[in-house]
Each structure stands twice: as C-alpha cells, then as structure tokens.
Amino acid sequence: MQIEVQLFSILRDCLPAGAERGQATIRLPNGATLADLITHLGIDRRLGYHATEIEQKAGWQVLVCGRYEADMTRTLQDGDQVRIFPPVAGG
Image (tube, rainbow, N blue to C red; front, side):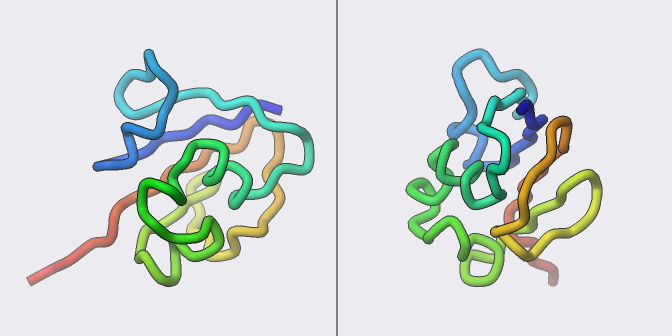
C-alpha cells in the first residue's frame, strides 16, 4: 500500500532522498500500523523514543487524514495521509 507522508522540522531528514517540501509517498505492506511507518522511516531512532511513544513521551503530534491520532498501533489504509508535527510551545 502507499501512504502519503509529510514530516516537519528535524524529521524531514527521515524521508527518502529526493523528497520535496518534506513530503514523500511511502510503500508499506498491507496491515502496517503507524508504529510500523515510524520505524520504517527511522523516526524512532531520530527522536530516541520507541515508535509507540513519540506522541505521549516525545510530544510530537500525528495526524492521519487530517485527524489527530494518539494510537500508534492504528492500522493504516492505502492512500492515507500522515503528517507528523513537532511539539508546540507557546508563551
């Protein structure tokens, strides 16, 4: 299946070579989860957290098809759009 991925900030380095504007199409096996995507891209290694912890412990925000998703075990569907944002701080 193909997943459209957009990464922000330091995670852009996790996209394959040639990705433009922090976006890429990623091929994953059917039944893959958000955690599988995070591991496939090396985001877990980049942030130093297990793939299931990047939202709760690292504070990164994950959206699937425009909706906030906290469950990294969620199964992805062909054509899903995933965006991962850094923690937001205000003042």
